[in-house]
Length: 322
Image 1 (cartoon, rainbow, N blue to C red):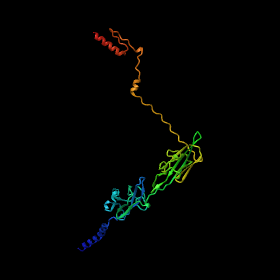
Image 2 (spheres, rainbow, N blue to C red):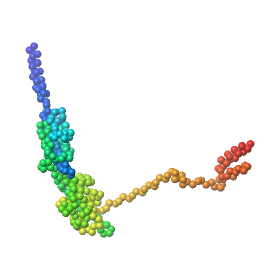
Image 3 (spheres, rainbow, N blue to C red):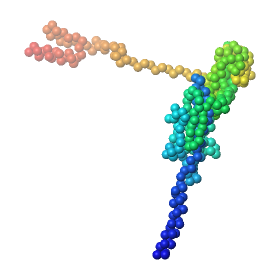
Image 4 (cartoon, one colour):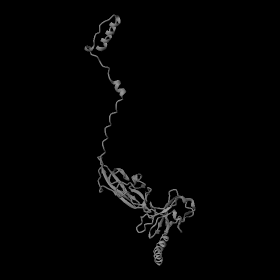
């Protein structure tokens, strides 16, 4: 009996810590909502960008928080509540912070409220923490304009005139993302000297994506993505001023070669209409030596019949008279 009691005591001593450990295996929820910032749209409305950082663990390991964890997750006012995420994982896009969504405007944003009127605030409450969105100037994603005009080179023509080819490279960003730039033709940010070709200047600078690794670069040399081309140029200097930078066209620049235009392939002849083809065929002509004079029977004379047909008809004629 004493041995049994001792054995039971040992079992209890061993199992008790395991039972207590199992009971303590609950996730440690540590997650924060983040208001990344805002941009203003052309129509005067705003887009709001939200992210989060998840530091939750379970047994010392990263823990993905879901709706099953019964955490607070709401927007005030609740107009855009359907946008709220229900799972908070580990995007792994910020070095050293695996639970952090990307900074600024990023594909891993928790959600985006578009076309907001900018009135008041929007508060995101998440797991005991809040993030408040408003039109705070410090939170505006302002574009960083970085664009350069480029003189690609020139082409000489047989009449002694030249053509000058211009391009650009747009490296502008907003919140870390490529940003298309609009620059009006004016005397400050986008003009040409002399101004005889001002109407040729582009006003939109995007991302042609024709040069590997340089998405904002127009094609080298003579290319369909050139910003503009000045024809009938006499070779004197032309200066393009764009956003504080210049590109000068002159005959000291690169001489270019026009690409050869591919020859037009010969068009295949239209297939002839079978009906027309049949109409065009001439009736066969029977030569004189192919004609056979048939025997005269009574007043019936058969001319110009093939030999076999004529003979058959003659036979039938004779039989009918018997």
